[in-house]
Image (tube, rainbow, N blue to C red; front, top):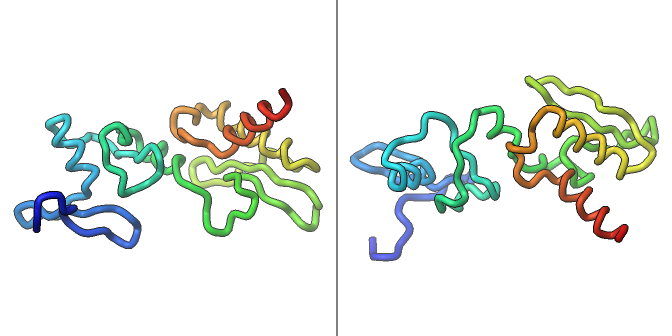
Length: 149
């Protein structure tokens, strides 16, 4: 290994892993220890959702639920917005949110924008704004507002 080389290896999920004295550690946890001097009590969240971006400014200590909320869209998502999907039989956009592993319907809408707004309202009612730092629903609504001006 040379100066400037990245230590450890990258897992298929994108996380960097480094071995220290025969123990394997996720690189973001070592970044935290190096900066704060202690391991985090809770989960560490990559604010920008990039598991290989381990700068301390991109890490925050969060609960497991908050960490799960700040995940990207599933590969099956076709709307681009988490919690919004097209329901062919109804010919409507469905807005939903998952709470404690249960899908909760937020409603069915003719307009995509209304479904996105409903999803965002549900996120805000549940106090999720502090968890999902880059909510696609929030970004979409902000973009809509700018376009109206």
